Image (cartoon, rainbow, N blue to C red; front, top):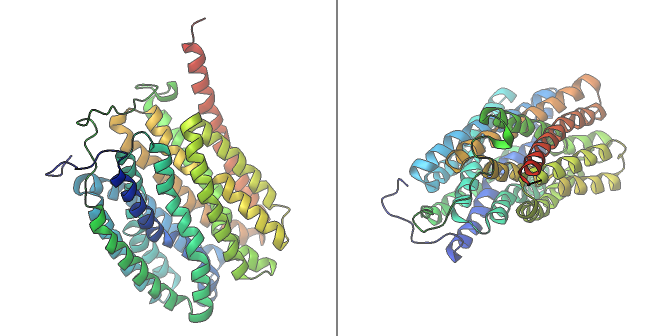
Length: 413
């Protein structure tokens, strides 16, 4: 610890749970930018007069900034504490939304999303908060991390319909200005509640979980194992981005209107909250790799179900199922790292894999728009997502096979 004084609270304490509640709220405010840009996409495309792929660029840069910024913010949190990082995030979100509201072109609009709203905004409230939560819990770490990560989807359930209403009644620029005030000030008010540093677990006599595979996760060289997890993270999130980024535009193309699409996105991400909590409990029972394998298989099934769905009712149903199926995928990577890598490097490895998932979301958001521009239809974009999901499923299956093989070899004949 770099703090001058040790924490006065123990892991899994009542304070830890109260802190988790504040963390959930901070994650909900900080993650807003991930979802409002999807809602504003049709309005921005029309105002700036650009193609669908170009209109997807703000989301792409935001996710790149989100991922890369997470590495920087994680290091700052380790050194100065998570409260300092949240203060940076409050400033980034407040200034970012205000600056975006006054841009005059898609390039500046996209850069503001990448730098202020991404790297110095949302990035401050994802990886640092997940890592901080893991340090405050031992017995209930899985469900605690799931609750923390659910704030990301809670943002997706709350903000899209509110932003859509704001766009319809006040325009997207005034809506962005209001978002800057609410999210920037709200996050700043939470900073004093997060000043306490995590407890010194070793000093408290609590043993940290050891990696099952020692220095060779999955029986592979550490860099090879990390590379596979990063590729899997990119692949699953390229597939995941297709419905999350383009469902509003897709509904508009089908003639149902952007408001129905915003409702579907909200429903999708609300169901994702339930999925994350359930997956957290499942992960504590069956482990991270099998949870990833289950989530990947179910996400692929949901993407297949989008292909024939072209009615309003069917799209609502499939959107809900997609949210229920895929919500636990990203948190499972953090658990996998804790299970299969030495504890001394778990933080760095988790940050790398989470960055890969965010880059996958960035690539998927842009790629789906590009496929639409080339084909004039989202059908091919869904197929593209299914192919990427198959890559993720194959890697998850390979890792599960390696783990299962190691367990069989460990059992005496």
